[in-house]
Length: 553
Image (tube, one colour):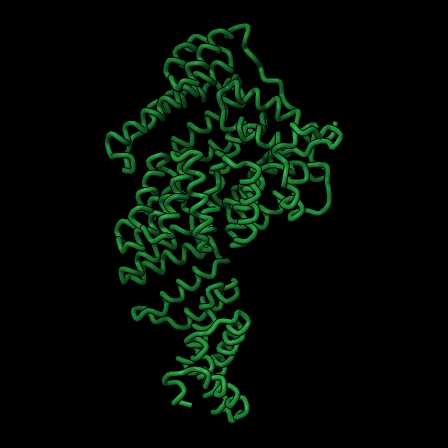
């Protein structure tokens, strides 16, 4: 059996097993990868190619050779295990409980299964109790603090579930799904080390539960922790590593993994979206825009990850495209956090910051832990000069994900606005540690060093140099380097940077006060160095500009 046929067979079985255990998110993910596997050309029919039209241009962009196997040479497959099914013992009760579960009547589902002892029934009973506890916790949080407030509410089912699942694991009568649930409970209790071990056991014995991989990834906060994991060799491990590298901001490594996976999952919209996410973090906006345009042609009602596309359109100030996208998601599903963030971006671009905040708050009412909404709402409060509210929003963002560099950067901006450069510098350093290839962060830190309270010009110069080496699109770093060197009396270095800045402005066909300043300094510098011919060239160019500069020549 070819590797593609093997993957297809495994995923079909896994989808049935995951659906049967009410793990619908993992089942959806597996189904998306199933239809993303490249079909055998001999079996192509109009019905099984409807998700694949228009996809070749993206595929060609990331790999040029057709490799038929997903894992690298030498990686073995784990065969799909036949899960122990308990239909003979508790089939009717299980069907009733599953019906209650699907209707979100979790406690009724758990009650129906209280006397059933099969592994499948035990898992569904415990899972139903866990979700009942989560539901009650959310209700208490809203009752006590409101939908966006902080609360000490806890899942009251966790303690009893931890005891039961621990005993089942110790006695060896727990299945991989039970281990996944035990991992969730341990994370809730804050026992991360044991949670990692348990989730590793789950994915090693049943690798098709993407929800288990996702929880394991959330516990891999450093590359050292990731490398310490002992994982079975299976193609699902490649998906996990690609996603983990992305979270650890190892974007090039993540791209390599996803490009490799595309050899088999050629039409996977998930992989394309993850590639777009990595390129977004690398600020390759043109590529991101192309990928999302094609994604939305193939999957026009997609909302997942599309808020990232709206961020790109916002950064490029594409009013009409962002307006169309906002209308599109509003008509598709307006009560999704992603939809609210897209509409919030649209109003922000129009300068209607109060209305933008309204939609970001709506996103957070739908999902209190939606990281992007907290960060974007903080940006809006900064625009509105409401720094206390901005700081609160950014702090909520870093509480959810301490690796979100945008929130740390926002905190730095807020404290800088409040005239507290020492605090601002602390947060800028955190942001630049997490995203060292973003010139904007280095420039913000340099400007902080330039303030009257700090006045650490040498440190500012170092930051501007890093910004210049990180593709400074705003063209700030070179000009500031020239000005700082001139201020410190280093005329040769200043002339060098003014010349570089001038060359860049000429290449980009830009004019303005920076060009006048560069020409004037270079003219005076060349005159002092007795390079009169060069000085004359710069002076001649200055004659094209009106104002006090002309009288100084």
